[in-house]
Image (tube, rainbow, N blue to C red):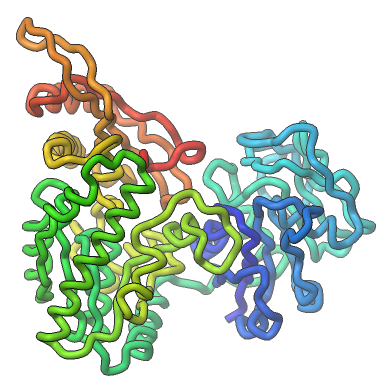
Length: 512
């Protein structure tokens, strides 16, 4: 099967390019820009896409376009930094723009097969500080904006294209169509890729990696780790041992629900209540990164202790499985490309070295909705498949300020009401993620003719397809009014409720 090679030059959106193409049925793979020609050719490339990135092409040490890209003699598309690389490499001129162009811009396009069937004007998402000032010989413009005269370019042979905007993000209208037009109209590839093809491949990969060994898995009850537990169980049976660590930072009734769900699947879970240890570690801590680090260190301590106990019971355990997804990897900047770090994640880096296990990460290059499709193919119950994402550090990153048992209890109750009402109003499945955030402030209120001075919570609900970009959910006012009244009326200690209307970007989905 011919592939589309996506070379990563560091954009936070790079993996979305692969995702959009897979959605359209094209086999796309992500490789670091430093990959060798021999490795690249193993994927039988029919086209190459150069991603965006945070660098300037003229900076010392900036990543450059590999020479072998041109020697492949296949169509090439450069996105943002990728466009600038094409211009810079082939003799054009790139300079710092008069001002950074960030956000939506109106694109004016010419008639070209890259925009086949699309309007002559539509909105695109820009994010760049440099721009092309002079095109290489043999190139011409096929689209512009008010600030970017070369918003899209191509060569006369029609084999090299570049776009200054990001077609892979949801904010660009017709972005997926532009990528598909490049792959189909320019490269001539056929849409033969299906996510279902991955299930057998992943099971085979697990069996090959693990052999006759045993695997332990940190199970949270979320769709990622639940799907991973089922995948491993399908692959190696009872040689996978899921460990559920109750950190005290879980959602209301989480432990009991997880135990019941997996007993029904015929999978035995090793349950550990370590909540007191986590609260001791978090005492007095308010910095978000410090919270994550302490939770991670405590988790390692607990996991190490339990792993040693399990080794005595089950014999040697060589492997540790994690439900790491690509957004975790790319935001933590450990995937082999140069992407900039936004925040550290609990489930990437550090654990294998500290625990002495070999790492098993079958979902490392998948998005959550792709994992959901795999979950359905494996037969995971639908109520587990549809569960909203939940952060590894749990409610600690939804409590701004110090994390205490009392503040966790407050947030659990408010969050439970929000989720319960989303389901009751048939809104739960229409949003990607929904939760409550406890603020480190108190506000004045009046309840029963008495003055109150209590906590404030923010409700957050977003719509997304992959978590890399998201928009705030337009929930009905009547619904929000009802939820607010329930929280204030039923959760003693909260007297104010707000709703977050920030998209990603510029915000993140979680508050910390």
